Image 1 (cartoon, rainbow, N blue to C red):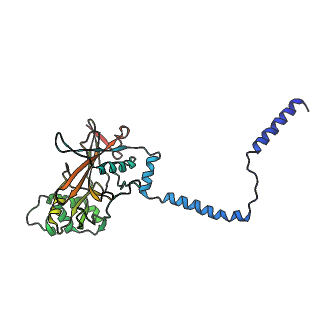
Image 2 (cartoon, rainbow, N blue to C red; image 1 turned 45 degrees about the vertical axis):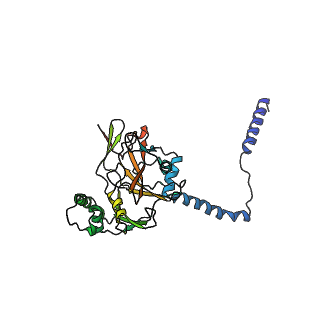
Length: 323
């Protein structure tokens, strides 16, 4: 055998030995080891089911640290009392903004509670669904006791418009009324609140600084935006009047949502709006406290500021620009 062929053969043997070292060695599996195979299989199956059936809120929160794009951020703004004085921002506002910023990958009007496990002190009251009650709904809109008005109420047209817009929902058997009982004013007295579903507007106009406007038709339903809160008559008529007839600072209507801070033992009334006059913001959340003496007290605004790359995509698919 020539010297050249010997060298090629030795090189081939060396390569074979090096590749063979990476191959798994044959091992004899004992009966004791076989007993653990069903256990490991059950653990793997349980892990898969846990991932598939994870709570929706947890899944939404995880997307923030994943690959889902961040659409914008929530920023706290003080409430101006006049041209020179602003209301000091409550610490709760920064706490709530930090909680909301855990869900930056969700559009503003997504029907998601957005309560992060990082802030367990933030809770919402439990709302119990109610059967349809026409008399109660009319009383909420018109302010007439027992749904009977001695004179024409200025809210009668609003009531008729609401009946027309919710006709399809009532026909489908959708829930329109919820109730909860809480100590709202912190005086030890339990008050009953009603949450009524408001129909989503047929169209919404969203300001996009500096001069563009996005028209969304129609906006998606969100229980935290498309709701109206009302207090039922109780032993404190002045408290009921302040809650039902009052409005959040700078808002035409009352609150649409509420959150309880377990650390401060205080309820905060929120008004979610699909518009904003805050610099750089396209939507706004008004935050207020409620007291038996003064009614609504403004605490801050929280504005949703979309990132430039998602400004045109902040609405639903098919959104168009109008000058």
